[in-house]
Image (cartoon, rainbow, N blue to C red):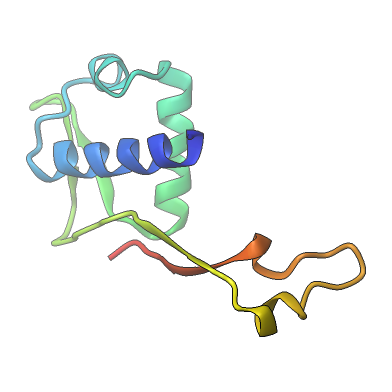
Length: 105
């Protein structure tokens, strides 16, 4: 599933940044199995979420500029019969299941 691989990629990125062992952008993109331009898009999205990611040219590594922990996860739970009644007008609330936890801690 593409969504789970994206979550795994975010968690791997977090670990590499937390350990300040990302390497330069090209090396990091290779470690994550993506192209360099996609890496920049992901980093931009994370920065828009106020995640304090910075880059040190001397160490050639990304790092958190202040103490920070991130964990991406997704938990799905089947809807009850009552909850399925909230499906209306072609719009499905919660996509047939309820997202319990999607978080960046």
